[in-house]
Length: 345
Ligand SMILES: [Zn+2]
Image (cartoon, rainbow, N blue to C red; front, side, top):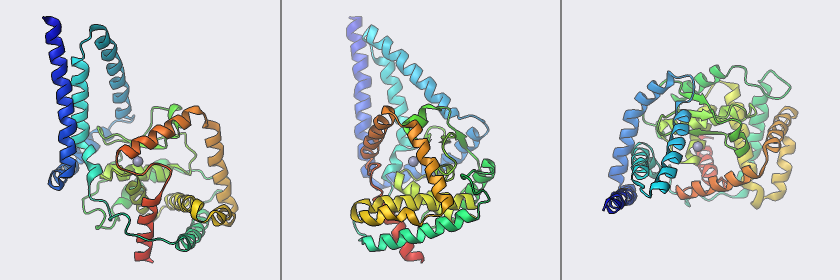
Protein backbone atom coordinates (compact mmCIF):
# COMPACT_ATOMS: atom_id res chain seq x y z
CA UNK A 1 0.00 0.00 0.00
CA UNK A 2 2.75 2.43 1.06
CA UNK A 3 4.68 1.56 -2.06
CA UNK A 4 1.71 2.34 -4.30
CA UNK A 5 1.26 5.68 -2.52
CA UNK A 6 4.93 6.53 -3.01
CA UNK A 7 4.70 5.68 -6.67
CA UNK A 8 1.58 7.79 -7.00
CA UNK A 9 3.35 10.77 -5.44
CA UNK A 10 6.34 10.37 -7.75
CA UNK A 11 3.99 10.10 -10.69
CA UNK A 12 2.22 13.30 -9.69
CA UNK A 13 5.50 15.31 -9.59
CA UNK A 14 6.71 13.77 -12.81
CA UNK A 15 3.39 14.72 -14.40
CA UNK A 16 3.74 18.26 -13.07
CA UNK A 17 7.22 18.55 -14.55
CA UNK A 18 5.89 17.41 -17.89
CA UNK A 19 3.01 19.89 -17.59
CA UNK A 20 5.56 22.63 -16.95
CA UNK A 21 7.47 21.70 -20.12
CA UNK A 22 4.25 21.98 -22.06
CA UNK A 23 3.15 25.17 -20.36
CA UNK A 24 6.41 27.01 -20.99
CA UNK A 25 6.47 25.74 -24.55
CA UNK A 26 3.04 27.30 -25.06
CA UNK A 27 4.17 30.47 -23.25
CA UNK A 28 7.14 30.78 -25.57
CA UNK A 29 4.74 31.02 -28.52
CA UNK A 30 2.77 33.86 -26.97
CA UNK A 31 4.24 37.31 -27.52
CA UNK A 32 2.18 38.82 -24.69
CA UNK A 33 3.34 36.32 -22.09
CA UNK A 34 6.96 36.57 -23.22
CA UNK A 35 6.63 40.38 -22.95
CA UNK A 36 5.29 40.06 -19.41
CA UNK A 37 8.14 37.80 -18.36
CA UNK A 38 10.67 40.20 -19.91
CA UNK A 39 9.07 43.01 -17.89
CA UNK A 40 9.36 40.83 -14.80
CA UNK A 41 13.05 40.24 -15.55
CA UNK A 42 13.72 43.99 -15.72
CA UNK A 43 11.68 44.59 -12.59
CA UNK A 44 13.65 42.11 -10.48
CA UNK A 45 17.16 42.37 -11.95
CA UNK A 46 18.07 45.57 -10.10
CA UNK A 47 17.19 44.04 -6.76
CA UNK A 48 19.09 40.83 -7.52
CA UNK A 49 22.16 42.69 -8.78
CA UNK A 50 22.10 44.90 -5.71
CA UNK A 51 21.77 41.96 -3.30
CA UNK A 52 24.48 39.73 -4.75
CA UNK A 53 26.92 42.53 -5.58
CA UNK A 54 27.66 42.88 -1.86
CA UNK A 55 29.28 39.45 -1.82
CA UNK A 56 32.87 39.32 -2.94
CA UNK A 57 32.70 35.73 -4.17
CA UNK A 58 30.29 34.22 -6.64
CA UNK A 59 27.27 33.20 -4.60
CA UNK A 60 25.83 31.54 -7.70
CA UNK A 61 28.80 29.18 -7.93
CA UNK A 62 28.38 28.20 -4.28
CA UNK A 63 24.68 27.67 -4.98
CA UNK A 64 25.51 25.38 -7.91
CA UNK A 65 27.87 23.31 -5.75
CA UNK A 66 25.21 22.91 -3.05
CA UNK A 67 22.60 22.16 -5.71
CA UNK A 68 24.68 19.43 -7.34
CA UNK A 69 25.47 17.97 -3.94
CA UNK A 70 21.76 17.85 -3.02
CA UNK A 71 20.80 16.48 -6.40
CA UNK A 72 23.30 13.64 -6.16
CA UNK A 73 22.36 12.93 -2.56
CA UNK A 74 18.65 12.65 -3.38
CA UNK A 75 19.36 10.75 -6.57
CA UNK A 76 21.14 7.99 -4.64
CA UNK A 77 18.49 8.07 -1.94
CA UNK A 78 15.71 7.86 -4.54
CA UNK A 79 17.31 4.95 -6.35
CA UNK A 80 17.70 3.12 -3.04
CA UNK A 81 14.15 3.73 -1.85
CA UNK A 82 12.61 3.71 -5.33
CA UNK A 83 10.82 6.92 -4.40
CA UNK A 84 11.67 9.89 -6.60
CA UNK A 85 9.34 12.42 -4.99
CA UNK A 86 11.93 14.74 -3.39
CA UNK A 87 14.16 14.67 -6.45
CA UNK A 88 11.23 15.55 -8.69
CA UNK A 89 10.13 18.37 -6.37
CA UNK A 90 13.63 19.87 -6.55
CA UNK A 91 13.58 19.62 -10.35
CA UNK A 92 10.10 21.16 -10.54
CA UNK A 93 11.06 24.14 -8.41
CA UNK A 94 14.37 24.85 -10.13
CA UNK A 95 12.90 24.48 -13.61
CA UNK A 96 10.08 26.87 -12.72
CA UNK A 97 12.42 29.52 -11.27
CA UNK A 98 14.73 29.20 -14.28
CA UNK A 99 11.94 29.64 -16.79
CA UNK A 100 10.20 32.62 -15.19
CA UNK A 101 13.44 34.42 -14.44
CA UNK A 102 15.44 33.74 -17.62
CA UNK A 103 14.38 30.93 -19.97
CA UNK A 104 11.67 32.90 -21.74
CA UNK A 105 14.13 35.65 -22.66
CA UNK A 106 15.41 33.37 -25.41
CA UNK A 107 12.10 34.01 -27.11
CA UNK A 108 12.30 37.80 -27.25
CA UNK A 109 11.98 39.26 -30.68
CA UNK A 110 15.35 38.98 -32.43
CA UNK A 111 17.08 42.21 -33.50
CA UNK A 112 16.09 41.49 -37.05
CA UNK A 113 14.49 38.81 -39.11
CA UNK A 114 17.21 36.38 -40.11
CA UNK A 115 17.88 35.40 -43.71
CA UNK A 116 17.05 38.88 -44.91
CA UNK A 117 20.60 40.11 -45.14
CA UNK A 118 22.74 39.27 -48.09
CA UNK A 119 26.42 39.69 -47.51
CA UNK A 120 29.04 39.18 -50.16
CA UNK A 121 32.47 37.91 -49.22
CA UNK A 122 33.89 41.10 -50.79
CA UNK A 123 31.99 43.18 -48.24
CA UNK A 124 33.23 40.97 -45.41
CA UNK A 125 36.81 41.20 -46.68
CA UNK A 126 36.61 45.00 -46.70
CA UNK A 127 35.18 44.96 -43.19
CA UNK A 128 37.95 42.62 -42.02
CA UNK A 129 40.62 45.01 -43.27
CA UNK A 130 38.86 47.88 -41.52
CA UNK A 131 38.80 45.97 -38.22
CA UNK A 132 42.40 44.85 -38.57
CA UNK A 133 43.36 48.52 -38.91
CA UNK A 134 41.21 49.44 -35.89
CA UNK A 135 42.74 46.59 -33.86
CA UNK A 136 46.30 47.71 -34.70
CA UNK A 137 45.45 51.33 -34.01
CA UNK A 138 43.91 50.60 -30.61
CA UNK A 139 46.77 48.28 -29.63
CA UNK A 140 49.20 51.15 -30.18
CA UNK A 141 47.47 53.13 -27.44
CA UNK A 142 48.29 50.41 -24.93
CA UNK A 143 51.59 51.05 -23.19
CA UNK A 144 53.11 47.59 -23.06
CA UNK A 145 54.92 46.24 -26.09
CA UNK A 146 54.95 42.84 -24.43
CA UNK A 147 51.88 40.63 -24.13
CA UNK A 148 48.72 42.62 -23.33
CA UNK A 149 48.00 43.02 -19.60
CA UNK A 150 44.98 44.69 -18.04
CA UNK A 151 46.21 47.51 -15.83
CA UNK A 152 43.39 47.43 -13.33
CA UNK A 153 40.42 45.08 -13.61
CA UNK A 154 38.26 47.27 -11.34
CA UNK A 155 38.73 50.24 -13.67
CA UNK A 156 37.82 47.98 -16.58
CA UNK A 157 34.60 46.83 -14.89
CA UNK A 158 33.51 50.39 -14.13
CA UNK A 159 34.25 51.40 -17.75
CA UNK A 160 31.87 48.65 -18.87
CA UNK A 161 29.14 49.85 -16.50
CA UNK A 162 29.70 53.41 -17.63
CA UNK A 163 29.56 52.51 -21.31
CA UNK A 164 26.26 50.59 -20.96
CA UNK A 165 24.59 53.97 -20.68
CA UNK A 166 25.68 54.78 -24.22
CA UNK A 167 23.88 51.82 -25.77
CA UNK A 168 21.56 53.05 -28.54
CA UNK A 169 17.94 53.17 -27.36
CA UNK A 170 16.82 51.09 -30.35
CA UNK A 171 18.66 48.14 -28.82
CA UNK A 172 18.18 48.93 -25.17
CA UNK A 173 15.35 51.23 -24.09
CA UNK A 174 15.66 50.28 -20.40
CA UNK A 175 17.45 51.99 -17.53
CA UNK A 176 21.00 50.83 -16.79
CA UNK A 177 22.66 50.75 -13.40
CA UNK A 178 26.13 51.10 -11.97
CA UNK A 179 26.08 47.91 -9.95
CA UNK A 180 29.22 45.81 -10.26
CA UNK A 181 28.02 42.21 -10.07
CA UNK A 182 30.98 40.67 -11.92
CA UNK A 183 32.69 37.77 -10.17
CA UNK A 184 35.70 35.61 -10.87
CA UNK A 185 34.51 32.02 -11.32
CA UNK A 186 35.17 29.60 -8.47
CA UNK A 187 35.38 26.67 -10.89
CA UNK A 188 39.01 27.07 -11.83
CA UNK A 189 40.99 25.35 -13.22
CA UNK A 190 38.08 23.16 -14.40
CA UNK A 191 36.58 25.79 -16.70
CA UNK A 192 39.94 26.51 -18.27
CA UNK A 193 40.10 22.89 -19.41
CA UNK A 194 36.59 23.14 -20.78
CA UNK A 195 37.25 26.28 -22.80
CA UNK A 196 34.55 28.27 -21.00
CA UNK A 197 35.36 31.99 -20.93
CA UNK A 198 32.51 33.11 -18.73
CA UNK A 199 28.90 32.42 -17.85
CA UNK A 200 25.86 34.19 -16.52
CA UNK A 201 23.94 32.89 -13.52
CA UNK A 202 20.21 33.40 -14.11
CA UNK A 203 19.40 32.75 -10.45
CA UNK A 204 21.66 35.45 -8.99
CA UNK A 205 22.27 37.61 -12.12
CA UNK A 206 26.00 37.39 -11.38
CA UNK A 207 28.37 37.48 -14.34
CA UNK A 208 31.22 35.02 -13.84
CA UNK A 209 34.43 35.21 -15.81
CA UNK A 210 37.36 32.86 -15.96
CA UNK A 211 40.13 34.86 -14.31
CA UNK A 212 42.80 32.46 -15.59
CA UNK A 213 42.20 33.53 -19.19
CA UNK A 214 44.80 35.49 -21.11
CA UNK A 215 44.02 39.16 -20.51
CA UNK A 216 43.00 39.74 -24.14
CA UNK A 217 39.90 37.57 -23.59
CA UNK A 218 38.72 39.22 -20.38
CA UNK A 219 37.39 42.67 -21.41
CA UNK A 220 35.15 41.30 -24.14
CA UNK A 221 34.08 38.29 -22.06
CA UNK A 222 32.98 40.51 -19.16
CA UNK A 223 31.13 42.83 -21.57
CA UNK A 224 29.41 39.82 -23.14
CA UNK A 225 28.30 38.57 -19.71
CA UNK A 226 27.18 42.10 -18.89
CA UNK A 227 24.95 41.99 -21.97
CA UNK A 228 23.31 38.87 -20.46
CA UNK A 229 22.83 40.82 -17.22
CA UNK A 230 21.03 43.49 -19.23
CA UNK A 231 18.63 40.83 -20.51
CA UNK A 232 20.08 39.66 -23.84
CA UNK A 233 19.83 35.89 -23.71
CA UNK A 234 20.94 34.84 -27.18
CA UNK A 235 24.68 34.30 -27.46
CA UNK A 236 25.15 36.21 -30.70
CA UNK A 237 23.10 39.17 -29.52
CA UNK A 238 25.12 39.26 -26.30
CA UNK A 239 28.24 39.33 -28.48
CA UNK A 240 26.87 42.23 -30.45
CA UNK A 241 25.81 44.22 -27.38
CA UNK A 242 29.16 43.38 -25.74
CA UNK A 243 30.85 44.75 -28.84
CA UNK A 244 28.80 47.99 -28.68
CA UNK A 245 29.60 48.43 -24.98
CA UNK A 246 33.34 48.13 -25.69
CA UNK A 247 33.26 50.20 -28.86
CA UNK A 248 31.41 53.12 -27.26
CA UNK A 249 33.81 53.20 -24.34
CA UNK A 250 36.75 55.57 -23.86
CA UNK A 251 38.76 52.68 -22.43
CA UNK A 252 41.37 51.45 -24.93
CA UNK A 253 41.62 48.04 -23.29
CA UNK A 254 37.93 47.44 -23.92
CA UNK A 255 38.07 48.76 -27.46
CA UNK A 256 41.17 46.81 -28.39
CA UNK A 257 39.83 43.47 -27.15
CA UNK A 258 36.47 43.97 -28.85
CA UNK A 259 38.10 44.86 -32.17
CA UNK A 260 40.30 41.81 -31.82
CA UNK A 261 37.21 39.65 -31.21
CA UNK A 262 35.48 41.13 -34.28
CA UNK A 263 38.56 40.60 -36.44
CA UNK A 264 38.78 36.94 -35.34
CA UNK A 265 35.06 36.44 -35.99
CA UNK A 266 35.29 37.96 -39.46
CA UNK A 267 38.32 35.90 -40.40
CA UNK A 268 36.54 32.77 -39.13
CA UNK A 269 33.43 33.63 -41.10
CA UNK A 270 35.52 33.96 -44.26
CA UNK A 271 37.29 30.63 -43.84
CA UNK A 272 34.90 28.77 -46.09
CA UNK A 273 33.92 31.49 -48.58
CA UNK A 274 37.36 33.14 -48.97
CA UNK A 275 39.91 30.68 -47.63
CA UNK A 276 42.85 32.41 -49.24
CA UNK A 277 41.95 35.82 -47.83
CA UNK A 278 41.29 34.31 -44.40
CA UNK A 279 44.68 32.62 -44.29
CA UNK A 280 46.52 35.81 -45.33
CA UNK A 281 44.54 38.28 -43.18
CA UNK A 282 46.60 37.85 -40.02
CA UNK A 283 49.69 39.06 -41.87
CA UNK A 284 48.30 42.60 -41.63
CA UNK A 285 48.16 42.51 -37.84
CA UNK A 286 50.84 44.42 -35.95
CA UNK A 287 53.70 42.71 -34.15
CA UNK A 288 52.11 43.37 -30.76
CA UNK A 289 48.72 41.94 -31.78
CA UNK A 290 50.41 38.83 -33.13
CA UNK A 291 52.19 38.43 -29.81
CA UNK A 292 48.82 38.62 -27.99
CA UNK A 293 47.30 36.04 -30.33
CA UNK A 294 50.25 33.74 -29.80
CA UNK A 295 49.66 34.03 -26.07
CA UNK A 296 46.00 33.03 -26.58
CA UNK A 297 47.08 30.04 -28.65
CA UNK A 298 49.52 28.92 -25.99
CA UNK A 299 46.74 29.07 -23.38
CA UNK A 300 44.50 26.96 -25.57
CA UNK A 301 47.19 24.39 -26.24
CA UNK A 302 48.05 24.18 -22.56
CA UNK A 303 44.44 23.46 -21.68
CA UNK A 304 43.67 21.34 -24.67
CA UNK A 305 42.45 17.92 -23.65
CA UNK A 306 39.74 15.42 -24.30
CA UNK A 307 37.60 17.40 -21.90
CA UNK A 308 37.68 20.46 -24.14
CA UNK A 309 36.37 18.47 -27.07
CA UNK A 310 33.72 16.90 -24.92
CA UNK A 311 32.48 20.22 -23.53
CA UNK A 312 32.72 21.93 -26.87
CA UNK A 313 30.43 19.25 -28.22
CA UNK A 314 27.93 19.50 -25.37
CA UNK A 315 28.03 23.29 -25.43
CA UNK A 316 27.23 23.14 -29.11
CA UNK A 317 24.22 20.94 -28.45
CA UNK A 318 23.08 23.15 -25.60
CA UNK A 319 23.13 26.24 -27.82
CA UNK A 320 21.21 24.44 -30.52
CA UNK A 321 18.56 23.32 -28.08
CA UNK A 322 18.03 26.96 -27.19
CA UNK A 323 17.24 27.77 -30.79
CA UNK A 324 20.58 29.26 -31.54
CA UNK A 325 23.33 28.46 -33.89
CA UNK A 326 26.07 26.27 -32.53
CA UNK A 327 29.45 27.65 -31.66
CA UNK A 328 30.91 26.91 -35.07
CA UNK A 329 29.17 29.61 -37.08
CA UNK A 330 29.12 33.27 -36.28
CA UNK A 331 26.72 34.32 -38.93
CA UNK A 332 24.04 35.94 -36.78
CA UNK A 333 26.68 38.08 -35.06
CA UNK A 334 28.28 38.86 -38.41
CA UNK A 335 24.85 39.83 -39.82
CA UNK A 336 24.25 42.19 -36.90
CA UNK A 337 27.71 43.68 -37.31
CA UNK A 338 27.30 44.18 -41.06
CA UNK A 339 23.86 45.79 -40.63
CA UNK A 340 25.30 48.07 -37.98
CA UNK A 341 28.25 49.00 -40.18
CA UNK A 342 26.04 49.72 -43.19
CA UNK A 343 23.96 52.09 -41.10
CA UNK A 344 26.76 53.81 -39.21
CA UNK A 345 29.62 54.28 -41.62
ZN1 LIG B 1 26.96 34.07 -23.22
